[in-house]
Length: 475
Image (cartoon, rainbow, N blue to C red; front, side, top):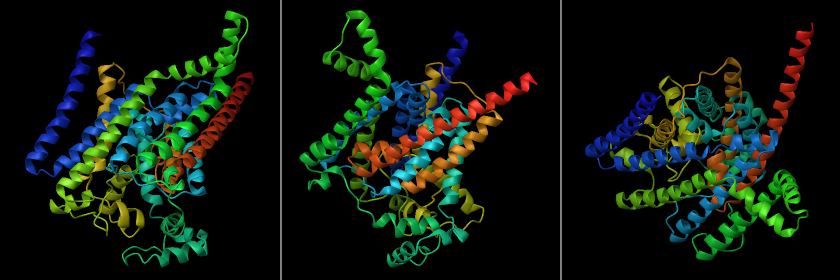
């Protein structure tokens, strides 16, 4: 046993050494690589935090709706508040790299599809990444399914154009996009340019007439009104629905009666039960905030607004969008870079997928070897692996045919939901809510509803299968 633990520690140190070697060697070649290394090391830290806190939205909602355990759901909500607190400081400095998303019912629908998918898959987008770092083969299949689906869905056209409302088509053409971008051809392109881009972009601060960068806007509008109060109310709902009865029953046995002070004690006990996830969330918030500051500082230092310019300076102009950009959020994000991996492969195999908005106009498909966000996701897997190895939690898990099937189906639904919502459980909910973006809560509400539907479906499916097995045994 001791020898096995020693071997796992050596693997963990080897992963850290490998990433250090990449950072040092690439920087010695060109100082611009430090920009990519920032993504790498923050991704590494995210992976360690996720693995430590078992930070998975799918597990949170599955535990809540299937077995009535609110610990993970409460922990994620607390983590969102803590992240928002750090984000408020960063925003008030004027160095935030965050951009709010359009707000409309599309976010709810996207969240619904994503929520169903993550329950089917057994892991959300970020959760599947860190579980891949633990050696989970099912999680890897989920990531592959999400990635392939996004790459295909972003470029879908043909018969799907018949489903596009005329108003979307006309609005997309009216945007005057470059000739290389077929805005009038392709369902997703017309959905984006003809519908989503026409929706209002709002934060809680802006709806109150405050500037996001002002102290009042960052702390009162976005933090207090946009995160703390809604989160506290949501936690009250969770307490009443899942924790209150059991806690008060124990209190009544101990002291004979209960009152309002016991209600407060029960609420606080529920929150403290999620300590490990909350700690992980606080660290995620600190690291996300620091990444914004460091990334923006490097942009100022190098005189750029996007990593696409740096890649062009280094001679890597292949896969850059028509705007000279690549996906470069400046903070923690999941799913877009995974879609870029597959999009790049498809393009190398002969697919003409740079004529759409997603790849050709906004994100590009640079070589994964020099794509900043790609470095972040790969390092996230590595960080999770290091944490799992150090705590003896790493183990290769081969997927069964049934689990693989659900992984592919769930991953596909998450991929579609991510493209419709312009992000996943991280980019469309966790990050947006913490920044006071109103669309984040809409995606979250849809995701919760989708998770509930997914759990109910699985309960029905399991009962149906067990009934068939019992019937077969009787025969």
